[in-house]
Length: 129
Figure 1 (cartoon, rainbow, N blue to C red):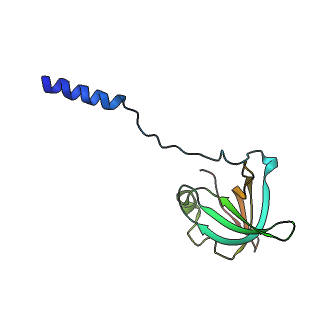
Figure 2: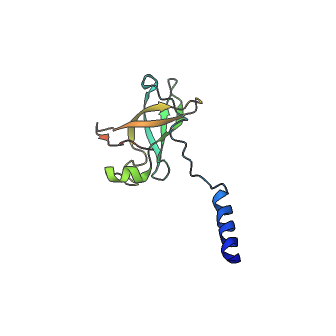
Figure 3: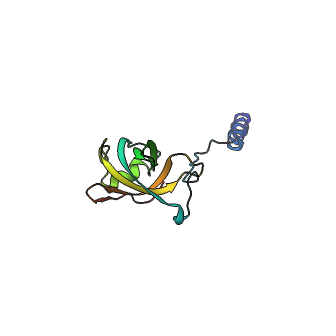
């Protein structure tokens, strides 16, 4: 009986301890008003087909002809795979246009909502985080 009480006390103490919570930032770092979406045309530097968000690194010319490096965040590779994506869906040095919501902090980053290849084909991004 004494051991049962001790076991219950220890088990109860573990239940009361704070547990780590898996947090997800979502898209809070990006503007969300449809009026704020921008479209960039550039050359893919690199495509990262990873979790929690796949990323396209894109060389884009600014209004003065200077090259800027932009990062486009997509949903995870596990959300893109059922839509036919692979690690080579977007190849390095490929010309693409991306549309999305720019970063709130003004950095060269955006949440991608649309990708159009140079041949006019639109890639299926789908939703999700």
